Image (cartoon, rainbow over all chains, first blue to last red):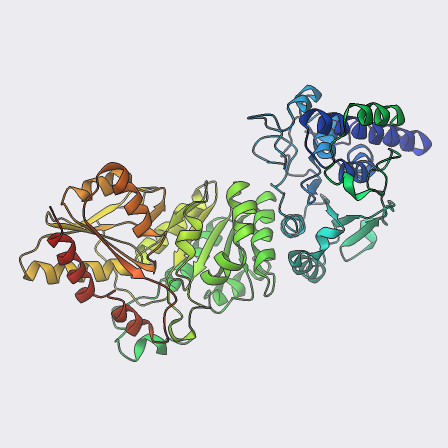
Length: 243
Length: 322
């Protein structure tokens, strides 16, 4: 089974435009999910949208028909509360039907408030409590090194999440084991894509300078949208802006 | 820790440290299957993994003194197709990294083998920070996680081999307290299957780990007094052998014995089962709280975890029969 980004990578300006369109679609989808569920974390969904779109539609190799392909690139959503964006990107990438997003947090839905790898394809580990993603990613990267595989491992953490000590335990181990196929992305304002990992002998941390609530005027940089839920008027206004 | 903890008052002849069976079996498993790896928190010595390290240095993943990361790394190694045996003093593995054990291993249902070394009060005089009498109560409610408390070298080896072949999370309690090799009735261990070590009709003593041989000694003491005691090996805490517990209640009196807190471990599991299915008089032996200073043998005797203490608890349970 071949691994590729979905859809087939395109280059230059087209690629950037495509990733932007995906990020916008993730925001619209996530906000609709939060609105319908009456629950969620839209601020963090929005700041993560560009990062997720870039990874799933520009960087990572995966096969939605064989989601546990041994050579796949791994993505770990350490800020596990941002499932609005995470489920949206997985559905858009083709891991499960977009129609399933309508069940977000409904009774017995596979789309729990926090991701579960046994409910849905495309999820590597169950997150929710903060500071769990990086240690698991370090293990995945060590396994890749032991097996001489070239897959890459990406972790998205929140910036507040870095206060959890387990991240620093993992960071020391990542450096010690020279995990050059591991990339940590900190969701913190503005995205910077890193250098070619082949030229490094150590793990990479990308500080993504993002904006919480990005894309909707009344949500940007407003902490009350960490887990705010829009009323009908706010939802309509946001959807007007997210085009 | 040195063996001096035990040897001062107790000859070690004919007795075995289950960690030796652990490390020997892990090496055999690693030889047979290159997916097997060990993950440690600098605990190469206390896990007796010096031999493993010499043979497969690259397959011994030492994350340093960082137990939360250690358990997460185990889950990641499983994701990458490895069979990780995460080995660490049980007090740190289950206490410090409990949330990782819950989320990354049990809830994520990953193929991680957790090996809690020197559990119970195995560290003796080092005290309650290093004791792990709470681990069974902490781990027993975690769905998906199989929990095995081997009683001797054979059962430790069996648990290790089972864990390597089984696809899913397993916790094995690996004792350091010297125990004799027991005469087992089963050819091999089976998930959730208790083992009747000795038949008896007046009382049933349910024990696991290093307490099993003491329960057998207690049955000898009781036999001299004309009391027929059944001894059941409850190595499996999860899944639990409900039928064996209900059968045991058929004797009319039940005693549980464990190297763990009396709250939430084997005693708790048996009490839950009896309350729901067949209530009978019951005595629970274990530790009522943090242990005072003392050698392992002193503490066992102090809390009645001895042939004398167990037999006296059995007589008490019998006296409470209606």
